[in-house]
Image (tube, rainbow, N blue to C red; front, side, top):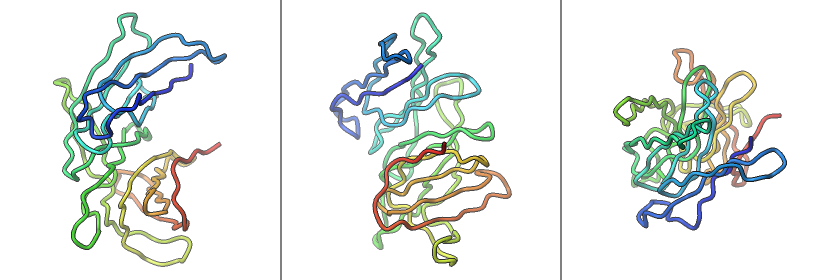
Length: 208
């Protein structure tokens, strides 16, 4: 199946309490099912271990996370709360090495314009519909710039989309920062970080 989330002209901080729509299509483009979720939907991914759809809403503030069981006849949907110490919301979702990760979007910057909060977190779903978030990459983490061959301090002013690379590494797009960040072994003791400034804003990425 193909799944698309429609934002339906909703506020990015969800203060309007309007609904987004997730639609399941067949491969030839026929609508098969749809679900309504409250908030401005942005990230939508399929958990490869549980086969549940995950959808993040409200990437600018007041965030939440929905899971949808596309195989349930009664439209099984659960809403999980998300804390946001960085002051914004959460955008994209990625799954690798048995873990789930979120991009912490719209961070609050300090007086020098630096993001000192987590830019990527791992997330665990709890039975009481809460979540446990663990920082994986800080917004001002140390990194190796692979373009200029230099040690640098990151400034993830606009964490946006994420992709899983062929070796299981996380690729984060710092959209407003015009940069790609690669996190090998994310959340593990051997985690390493490299980055590539690209000189122009990017949005999404994919490996084929």
